[in-house]
Length: 284
Image 1 (cartoon, one colour):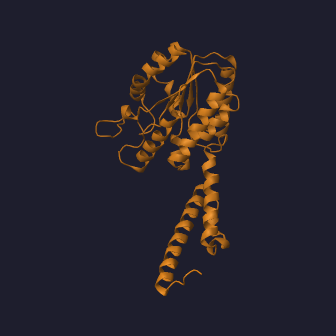
Image 2 (cartoon, one colour):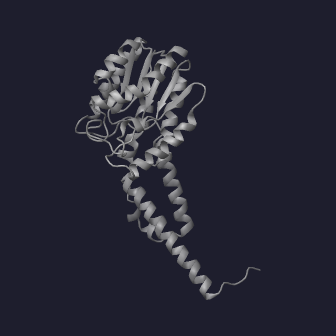
Image 3 (cartoon, helix red, strand yellow):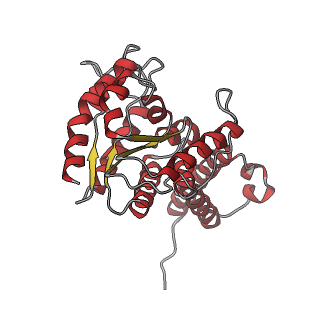
């Protein structure tokens, strides 16, 4: 028979249970805030036992984690880009992909989209027959949807450059593990779409002016995870340090808003990746 607990032992167990329950309720509340679902307002949430709360939290967390790996079209209206504009840009990419003319494809978000507006693009990449399918504001799930809905078309590139994930931190407040899962899902889709291409996956760029922040730490963690994806056809390159000053800060001359590279920022990026790009194209 199990031994009976003393009064003091019961007090300790009950205290731990109370703390765990409060923590779980707080975590569910955070999830509810991130998903706009009022879990905490439901009367049942005020009386659920610990194990039931834990099950609810695990289910909610699993659903949320899956968002980064589910193909989802843009559903957010931004002042600088409407949903209609997003679909128009995607339609333009689909038409370009139908032509099948590209030695190198760049896939990503606004950092990729803005690349072609920098002088470094015309100088270094234009001779390589590039196609740019970056769209500002995209998260891993949005790019994945586009890759599965016409953005790859008849393209048969020698190399694909993938850069995605920072908007999952900014707009979803995803964890590093969730962003990693989203990057991996896009990488696997690119393998399927371009089985003969080499893939250069760039680590998520650092953002925010100061070092040592939660955002900077999440970027370090996700990039460490991304490094595990390297194999014979996938090259991983983390060039974040090239965008930092000696003291770890980001200057406005390199990223005007501490997120998007300036023309000088793209100069640094190209200097860091161009040798690898040329080598991979020559190998393939």
